[in-house]
Image 1 (spheres, one colour):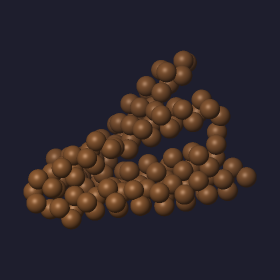
Image 2: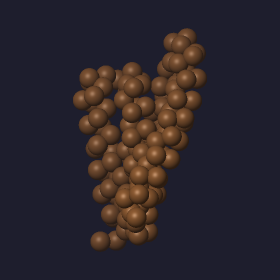
Image 3: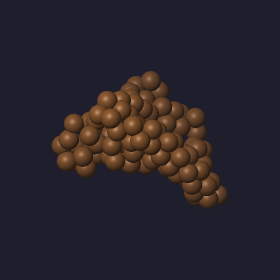
Image 4: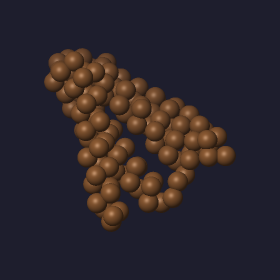
Length: 122
């Protein structure tokens, strides 16, 4: 299978997984109300990316899983929309805290994932 097609299928799977988590864990809420689900998805995605980096599989697998599945699973645009809606509603602290917490937690879980991946690969 051509790598581009494999990436497309993996992106579809990642988007489907993201939708499922958002829909069911978010209790059928509108996307801008699912702040905790978005945070969890982005942190889980960071952990999984860290594992992928740590395990360091062949290039084709890294591209399919990283560019395909994980890129579609995590979400930057939803985070931006949630920041906008929080600021628009006058919840400025929430608007600032969302990206700060997401980045800090993402970096920590990415580092943990890399370490765990290296240990698994050894």
